[in-house]
Image (cartoon, rainbow, N blue to C red; front, side):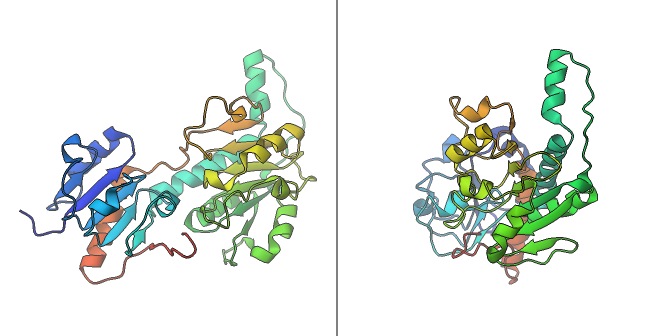
Length: 320
């Protein structure tokens, strides 16, 4: 029996991806995989660490010997908002692969809207050959990013490489090379200069429902794209979906690309599915790569057990 502390896995991910990653992870350490039916009634009091994504509601009562909780994704609202948590560190997943995927989705969607993706896709379906004469360049468009953590900063850097003008907003001012940034007091100025709004905010009490009609109505209406566009790959709870549908219908927003929703999966009766000016992706902008997640957890456990501080620990006061 290993003398390394046991680790608990409770991930509501694709089961095959977890099974492929586990044999290569946590060498010499006992792993309790709650995806295995044989472990569902097991005594969990011996587990010292837990890697979770939307875990069993009773997990933290049963696993009462934990020293740290590791989120299976960059977000932690799925833990903070749904459980009575013990007073111990909660660690976010920060990894190059996750960051790159998120930035790729943001760049992809910005280019889709810049290069008339909806119109050309419809022309293809209708077998119409028609070049759109007006074609703005990326340099003509200002992308405003709300949320300037690791993901937002990387998206900003990659959008700048593509030629977009990029500005950023966060509640407390951040410094990012080559990007003009705003804090809470500068929100209206930030919105008024934004042609494409990118939502990468964490979900907190302050950000729940922040993307509403009042906010959308403050976006730039004089930009090269003919109206403001909204992208959200942060958290679904940050958008007021009733307002969002209304704004996409009445022209307050020209278009949107949405990867996250208040309720997931998005219900088949949601009007967002059928709106011709909306891209819907199934919370796939930055899916966690399980092998990378487990490497991240191993590195953090190694730090903790060698007396070093954990990285990427969540501030429960701010919610991220």
